[in-house]
Image: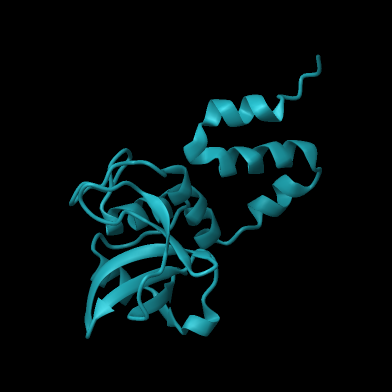
Length: 157
């Protein structure tokens, strides 16, 4: 048997919550050069991967990881893991980012939910109008469609 791990073994060890991460890892083993492309990912894309790896972690108000999160705790934790500093709460995170239009949004940008001028929730844009976030008590970190048009976007520099 070769020294290269088998893809099904990688995926089963990783569990369903991180099957995408395992598939990416497996692809980087099988496709030369993919690992170097991954290292060229933006901080937002890297933070998105961190957040996705936390899928299934329980929501807890005021928690910032590593095993429980509220919305801004997840974004703060994810960006900190890739060397970027964010304030603790969603409104302060909005004020710290470079504000961008919805048409300019990219995977890894922050999505801020607001009512009037009040920011009340944040997630990380995953593409296809979806975010990774820690929704509310009784839920877990997950990928979900953006459910409202009352959002602003911010990019972490």
